[in-house]
Image 1 (spheres, rainbow over the protein chains, first blue to last red):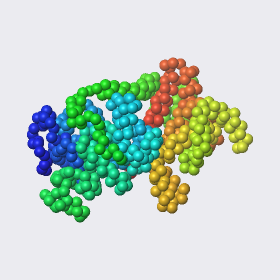
Image 2 (cartoon, rainbow over the protein chains, first blue to last red):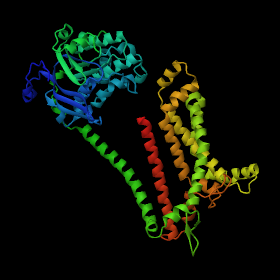
Image 3 (cartoon, chains in turn orange, blue):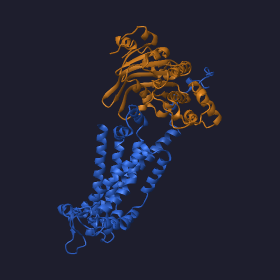
Image 4 (cartoon, one colour):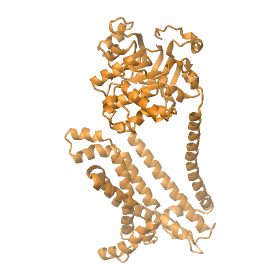
Amino acid sequence: MVDVASPAPLADASQQAVAAVPNKLEVRNLTIRYGSEAALRDVSLSIREHEIFGIIGPANAGKTSFLKAINRMDVFTSGMRVEGEIHFAGRDTRRLNNVYALRSRIGVVFPLPVGLPMTVYDNVALSPRLRGITEKAELDVIVQRCLTRAALWDEVKDRLNALGSLLSGGQQQRLTIARALSQEPDLLMLDEFSIAVDPVTTMRIEDVLKELRQEVTIILVTNLVQQARRLADRTAFFLGGECVEIGVTEDLFTGEVKDQRTRDYVEGRFG
Amino acid sequence: MATGTQALSNRATDARPAGDFDRRNADWYFDKLIAGVVFVCGISAILFVLGIFFFVTKEGIGFVFEKMDFREFLLTPYWSPSDAEDPEYGILALMAGTASVTGLAMLVAVPFSLGAAIYIAEFASGKTREALKVLVELLAAIPSVVWGFIGLVIMNPLLIKWFDIPVGLCVLNAGIILGLMAAPIMTSIAEDALKAVPDRYREAAEAMGATRWQVIYKVVLPAAKNGLLGGVLLGVGRGFGETMAVLMATGHAVNIPDSIFDSVRALTATIAAELGEAVVGGEHYQVLFTIGIFLFLVTFIINLSADLIVRGIRKG
């Protein structure tokens, strides 16, 4: 188990639920298995309200599985088993009656852009409509706000009726982010969002994320360690299903690490 | 990006209670309801098939257990169920009829449909493509009795004239008719399978300098082989189960064919032709249902092996 660097003691989960929640997310002894193979082993950490929490690590480190477990995607993933506890907003996500309500408050951006096969407008209006918002004027406001926040509005404002799946890769990824924002999420999880995005767009999205920190908690999974350094308040280093280290991001990059492997990874000396 | 400081929403995020994670709202219950409805639909499809199997078995099973001689049934070619004194129930000739016609039909249909599918999916463009697709689907909709009619009225005299044979209702006639009949649906499925291969595969191969045919042969066909195989097996099933066209074009003579110019009789055609005359519940009636069980089993085995082959391909 790793130091969780948390201001609140782990034991007081019930108390947290009533009091103001200092931690947005608390993960205890999380183990994720696919069949007999463990993708993640005994990870404990907590994520504070309104911080950007970075997760770095090479392929097969368990980063994506970690995000899936938070969102309870294991419900529809056959063979995926999750052990341990995940508390979101003070609630144990393993014991919820309505998993859809949980997901509707967590926005997820997957590595490859997913422009749904509907118009740009409908892509962003989908989640509000699912929430029951039908008034055109209200939807218009939401669509413009979310597209603006995702740094896409200027490029698509004249073609909101074009198919979302026909936008360029970088635009589709920003559309995906706009869609996630349209959920008005409490938690935004980005999984290597810049894989299919050009550097300029990546920088614009990073600026957006910095601003969003005021309003949402963000988990940023990235395989660009410098991206974590630019954005994350704290960063966890995952390796082969193990959470090697969690610390203030700058500490990881200035060599104040507890584990030699972390230093090797952030300095790019990884064999 | 002038609106950078604009709030994500007007409400305070923290104010939302976590309690709604437990509130099962209308959407949640509707989801459960739909899950239940589709479950019933799915299960009923299985129940119907089981019901048909049960019915066919019930009608034929009495004969199987009480009077049937398996050796006679499967291994002798003598079929004379109406003989009052000594009826004979050997389906070997009928099996040979069905197998020869289906086999020949596949020899006709597989190259034709594969070629047509490759042309439509890979070479044809724009209006040609759309027109061909519509035509192929139209062909697939021709009723089998019309195909049988073509076999009887057009193919029959042509074969007599060309090959100088006494009767043109034979394996060749039925095989061609059945092949042409199965080709459109096989083309349609094969074309879908080819279209399902992502364009980035083609682009990647083309970018290496592969010719169009090399791209198709080395990349597209292997990627689509499951769907193509599925199309072929659907064609086999179609040929196996086809009744009316086969009844009209084979000559309906109990015979193990020596050549493609011999008349034969198919299992399905036998049931269709004789069931109306057989006494309900009588021995002949039961034997026809036993053939039904046999057809059911063979179809099952074909589908099962197709499934296993496809799975095997997926693993490898």
